[in-house]
Amino acid sequence: MEKYKKAYIAGGCFWGMEDLFRVRPGVLDTEVGYQGGVNEHPTYQNHPGHAEGIEITYNPDETSFKLLLDYFFRIHNPTTEDQQGNDRGSSYRSTIFYQDEEEKKEAEEFINLVNTSGRWEADAVTTLEPCVTFWVAEPEHQDYLLKKPHGYTCHFERFGSFI
Image 1: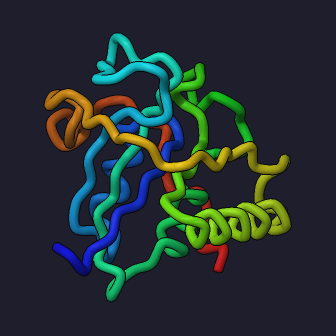
Image 2 (image 1 turned 90 degrees about the vertical axis):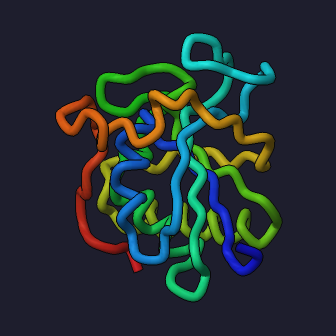
Image 3 (image 1 turned 180 degrees about the horizontal axis):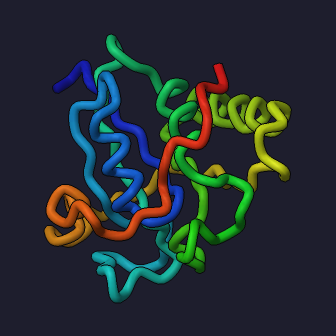
């Protein structure tokens, strides 16, 4: 697993994001969880300030951070602050948790690409936050839409690639 990388993003309810990312080329594993908040060991009922996010384990020989960002901006609305679909609050913010300056720069460049593309009616409000502890969510939230195929999601492919 040493050659594999991880990426951390949040873009609304973690169920829908995980369901779409799990089948992307080069993605080896996904887990849903909480990141960027104030308490340790957050739960679904108690995660103040944490975003519902996903941890993506990927093979950099088959995909890249840039390609993951491209898909991220295609499956959620990055222009709605603290909201995706019917979900509202900071848990549902659009965030890229960068692990180093290279990822931060790549994320900044991609947000600029999204904003200049004209595909959205407003600019992205996606935040860039340093990567902090990713707290894995409870087992019932992992692979949720595989367990409940007709469960709620507001994520879908809205248009083709930005690159």
